[in-house]
Image (cartoon, rainbow over all chains, first blue to last red; front, side):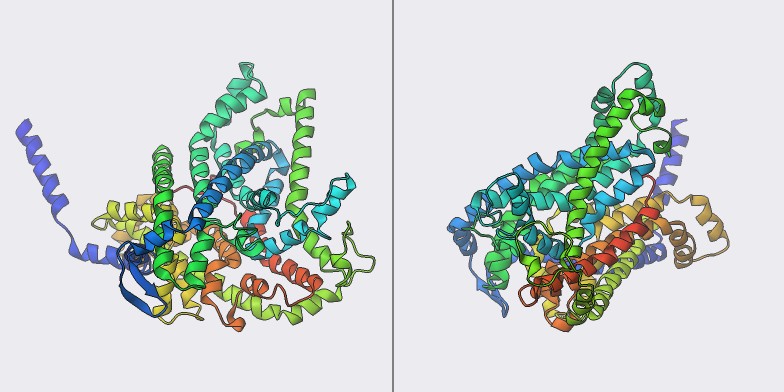
Length: 307
Length: 283
């Protein structure tokens, strides 16, 4: 008995070990374009970032190794702490102001029967607008004089505010825009997940006398949990990389109150052409976000193995 | 399917007095959200109809006394919007084609051809997806610049072609194609390229379509990368050009141009809705 099984095992092993090189060549030929572009525009650049951060590099290319000089300059600059403090505030504000929005919207839109796909398209609209164009419209909405928001507030006797020029208001003002842009995509993903839930579950719960709220609380939300985890981590990673909003609307001001690491990286790299220092900032980004990136990979894999 | 029969609430419950109340409450929320979401569209549309003085006047004046429809024609000509649309279509369209081609070939290999180190390749791609793009923005720019691709659409297409997300989604989609189809083709002596073009691609056309539309919308509005790569004004895409022209034009024409810029991705979205996947896209 055992010998035959061993024999079968060896046959399996050898057949598994024998590599059909012709087949492998075809397999790698199909993979080749992807391997080339990934090497060129992601894998090699990721390695380079780490090397650059220990070098003096500018538009002319490599100028010599400088050890930890870039890092010393980065940590010695108070803007570094301001930018990361801003990022922390952006992330917290976006979680408080924005994280719930797509979940609630998905639950409501899912309930809308025939109107469901109509509202689904509506909430997705802001994602479609070129962000640079959308922001220019928002600048008119937030404008201190003649802006539509201040005009609306005047109707209820609230004094006009300097939305983007007041350090206390600028960050929430930008978060509102980010929520406006980002909520649609997340809503769509939650909606798809809700539609995957077998209706029998809700039917059974209804017969057992669960209220609508209880059905949401004890069935819908637990089943959405893995998606919610992924989306929250993704939101943290995305918000921490905020660039276009402060770049176009405030350029990091007033008094650096809206600047972000990415905006600083952009300025260091492309106005001061100090690629080494910019890469040190890039590495700080990699380190700061690595925990969330790992969580993202873990959650995505979990979700995958379930589906 | 199930959402037609019932949501979290059953149809009977939906028609009950409590259901009516909840429905009313839900509709109010959705209407408020819809207004907030559509407002910038309406705002830019009507601002584009004002004259250049009224548009900056304080107060709420959504609809002008005499709408100046000519502004749209004027904006179209002065911003050279046909040229901008052409540039953006080349940038986004080429990017989508490159991305679909590269990703579907790679996904076919991972799903069907068992390349050595398949799991390592998949893991590396997944990890790549988790590295924030900004981390390697500067060296990527240097690579593209060294290849002489500044002011060249290839400088956009090559980075756009590398999409971890698309490879993983397609890998999953290709895995769900029944094996027997391939076995039948193999007996007939079909090559892998033949099976790829005649079985895999046609059977995944709806996933490819949806992924392509999503990418198109994303590339159409992309800002930072085209802003870095396309420096020459007659090559720039619409969002880059509109940004660089912010100060040079009267606001009403500017808003008219912004509204025009929003139209193509909106059309793509309505297509997307018609072809929307039933179960969503999973990795």
